[in-house]
Length: 499
Image (cartoon, rainbow, N blue to C red):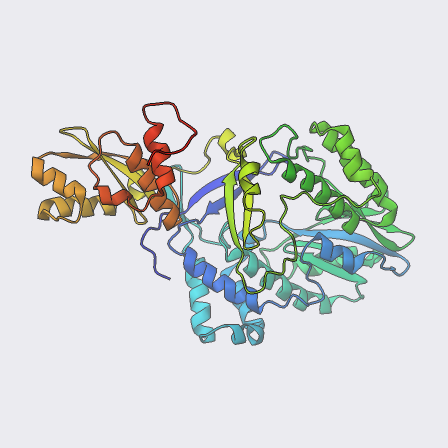
């Protein structure tokens, strides 16, 4: 649970474009937060203990489809959707602890501590909702933090507790009730709508529900489906919100063709799995129109969506069931470079223990400005950095997983004590040079230690004047060393390396 390179969580907002006046959904990015490991630990315990076989739980749209499609409703029954207003932000600590007590018989076998200790940890995490916004520090004094790994599972337990207490108070029987986090889809008698809203809203003063009734077509949206009541039979259709942009992976985007092909296949597969047979054809035609708007060739779309033959999956997709005995499959990624990446992947086609995935280096996030407060350079961690000598302007390249300021402090200590373990200390003391610690540059960031070491060696090799020892790059592949050396001052020669 210990951490040595944490930073204060950053708060930012995402606009709710489907609501009036576009309110902001506050999200706290808890990545590298001081309590992130403890939150994940508690979330793992609660997730392992959660009963996914309860009659209300819905895992996803596919699970929902298998549970309700084709159900027959009694006469005078309708379908409604209930939604909690700002569930995470309105869950009180007392309600969370009560829900934990209510489910302790399920949690205890997965938890290696007493109930009091476990509840104390949860209380500590709920009281530690500090974050930074616009350069100022704030403390969330009520509710669960949107962005914490602990909040979703706590919301599940609270909602289950709410249903367990509230449903027995109803004077009628529900035909069905399914729940996905804070979204409820319910089939009930027409005259019971007002009663169920009153009972659910009286459960807790902070949790309030909004209701969406059937439209003129006797349908209500839930997840990415539209629940339709046709002659009192439940049928599902593919649904997209009115605010949906219809933007998918564009055909001209910098993605491997295999990703685009498999995207179309999986979208068709999704429609076939969640839609009733009476709605499938119309949903497929809607998908066809959206793909054409995203510049997919009509011949490709027609072949993938409307062909009756079984089209084999593109070879870039890993086989689902590969019998490789006890061999452990290793996954690696390569940047998607036109006319090169697939040739490299072909070299490893016979390797049953290796899966290579093409990775697009261009990201949508690169097009937009940063919403979160920047992390100060001194508090950056898992970085490759460069320090320049102020006297001779030679450079030193290093890497660290801790705060950069701590690594700089260690460099200063090595120079002060004339430690021989560091090339920077040797350079500064042997030549009586001054090191410019005030202008440290970050060259790369990577949380993987092995990759970070490779990046460090590559950056050392590409420096024209270097303070580093020669031993600092001994772990670099001779192939990389050759490419870096011979492309520095001359065109690259794609031929044999002289012995």
